[in-house]
Length: 423
Image (cartoon, rainbow, N blue to C red; front, side):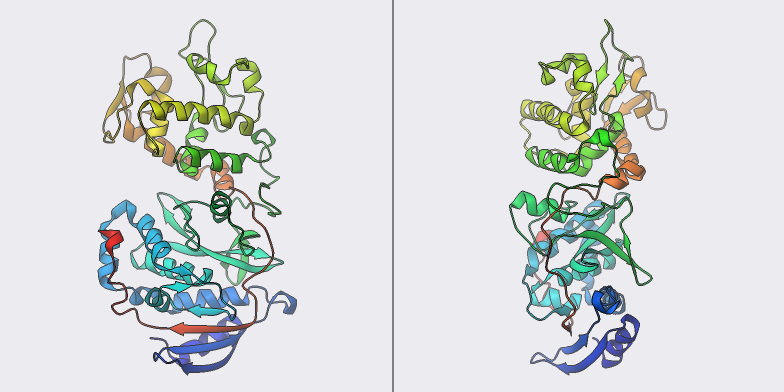
């Protein structure tokens, strides 16, 4: 439980002024602050207060041990389940007076605004041993929207909880998919480091409107590559980050990439997903050379038409990155629900030699798990780091603001007894 001394300490650290401290009708301590804003030369004071309250909350202690145990037992699914829990259990409610609830209070009440749900998710993830952080979308130089990211499978994943966003889905892309207008969801994503707002690695540049992407990206991607990729991935029930890794692994996102290895009669694999000659009919009436001259964005509809056809042949309405890679690589060998040690092709096969790089460990054969390793390896590439946050833009205006700020602290107690989502 917070004390007045805690709140006074956070006021000093952030540069905000603690106006009053009292207890509400439920016995919870309430702190009121006034924080400077961009006009006063302190645009990130509010963010500093949020970060301080989160770190100083001893947030892990606010999460019941039973919840922490259940999350940790989920293994690689823990981050995804933490996001699902907060998204389903914390109702988004905009506030007239900005109220910063502790993670415990938010989870106990079952509602809050963007900063409340983000801090609850970060606290929940950290309590389960998952690195997590706050991300601030800046408009006019100061925070307008706050969301969370969790570090999962070697990369920072979006964990937006105020709309029905999918795990890993950029908040702007979620609004676009859901056809929602959220004026607070605009601006550019930053994290707070030593009191300064720092753009995310591979930052997305100024987001002006839906469909705008960073001008620093290669021109052969096309001006709206990220949005088209996200929209097309949604049509096949795939994670756009998985599709991005697949395309990077196949071609480095070079639309003109060609591979003559293993093909006869002048044939060659071409494009961002390396269409083999037998599949060139998917971009008919274009010739292979004309197709290769398109931008990556212009190739995407052909690529996803191919993916859709392959998935329909197996009755699939959604697919993992590993299995999508498998279908793109050697569809005739695909086995639904196969374990990672399932052998796809062995040494001596005509398919092994040209794809020997997929054999992680030099085993003499390629498994389904090898394909996943190849996907995971793309997370460290500079192009992936630049593109991963870029799924689209959003309308601007509004913001967290610098008006009177309230903080409510509470223990969770038995409020998290409803854990059916984890069962």
